[in-house]
Length: 384
Image (cartoon, rainbow, N blue to C red; front, side):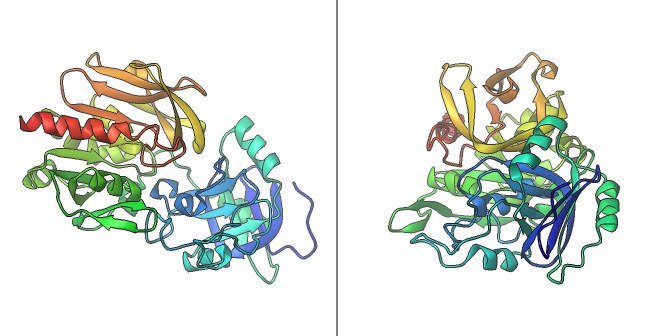
């Protein structure tokens, strides 16, 4: 339990009874979910709008969150994905030429609850040593914080295992995407000369992944997570992309795996990222498991087993593919140099591959962009 500051207006209560007192930011209210941490020094807008964070309260280990303000470009979805955030220092006035809004005001516009003044080092060490806890985060401007009720809410929350959250964040109907990547002095562009047709299955897709595909010349049709194989094939795609997303892949796999098995059999090029990688592994007969703390940050080293090169990657996942459960025709292609866990696979007899990390992000900054080129090459080969 942390010391209570004078006139606290927020508290984070964990399922083991510990209480972290602080001051509220964002909207007032209560949010209950898994408490995780992210070690990134930048990209807080992208993190808070990344659909893969659905069901989670994000603790930032970097203390100066909000110091460069907020803008209209650095978002991954138009609505909030994460439940709330925990930061150490109070938000200062923004200091960046791209800022158009104070981060505190931005949090309110996205209906996000936050707390400042927390000893994030102590909380992060606890998560690292004991796993990600369930927690209840409350912001009450009048200081009325019912700690007992918050503790009960944290303990009653069921946890991410067995939870299908893709259905909560996926699109409700199919749509087209033609926005390309951001360029200095020009902003985002528009695809005007498409070369390949790609269907992107939206399990919680980040916008910048779609931009990377469009920049590579892909005319994209985004379909909901529960789209059938027949619906996907109806668009006559040159390739199929499986997006990132939140929750337990085994739960989402109940409806996604049969579809993916049909798509794999069609022999079309398939490229998966994050949850898409995990679902692909399940469709091949592999297994996944919940990690104690997961991988969340922008400095994760990953080794390409084919070339020996090391990529600095951006990651956000709490479940992992078990390499030893993959079939003989599925080769592990990448591993984490933090813990040796699986970070990628490819099929030896079909044009199918996937990675656990996020090649569309820019921590390297472009260490992993070659993966989009690999997808393009597979589609090009299929046309021959």
